[in-house]
Image (cartoon, rainbow over all chains, first blue to last red; front, side, top):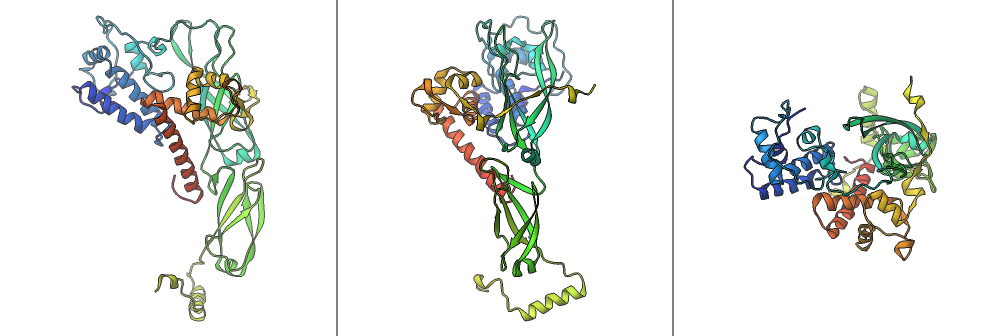
Length: 314
Length: 107
């Protein structure tokens, strides 16, 4: 197990005052709160931060940690001495942050796992199991066609010796057709087991989409950049467009400018009503990499009296 | 043994579209007492249908909003009004980010 440098995590000196610790913690907590932050490791950082604060804000725990930590550096291999907390008594308190105060093994080895209960009082004999919340990453095609995804959940449970262990649970989940990014799939009774005769909790999966190489997504609508040639845009043409449901033909009106937005009604994510697929024209210039191509450009220059900068007054 | 094939498969529902929650459902799913949900309704974070708390029906999206507001209050030691404001601003940021992505911007 690694030693955790709680001072480094909060970003204060070892002799910081309680006020300095509180201020530094609050600032970082706002920065890394998983509801606020977009950083990939926000959740882990926030948990670590909550744990560090749990120890350092409490004079008893801080003193115990200081006594122990003087000889260690963050990340170093750590084993608590057998009599390490003799003389200290911990008064307990609510979990510091994150769902249910999920502390590291390092914290648990020092202050115990029971600490997470946080003075909840007497546990009822029968109670509904805890709900589980997780995320599932799917492809855009999965919401169009529907799909089945195998999801592995790590579920903490208590073994015969009373130790908290992590078990893996594998579920096959049907991804409903038409589900949108950010929505939740509810699986009734697939959360933690209930206590006594209580029902099991529910499992909620928040759906996220993998970035798609072609489409961008806004709710049920899709956006697609479609390259067209200058002559297709100028003269009009019928061109092929890939959609989730297959290739369709799109009529480009003559005189279309770059950036023109065209709508393929009902070709977005299925639903009631289904989303649309917006096609945005981008005019692709043929490269002038042969003498013939250069000649064509020179001919246009001579024959078309065209200045795209007249609006700029130049 | 192939775990993929032996894993049980479940019927599911989309929370935001096919679910309506009562006050009791929401309290249980958020693991809080009803006063805390009532306070979120009073602050305008949640907008149930129905007049009396006993008749309230919350859309499925309320669960995510309620949990977020409760987490922000608890973890960042902010009051209800502050959490309500934060939830609204976060919603706005999310929809702006989605729009930005749709027009081809970063995020």
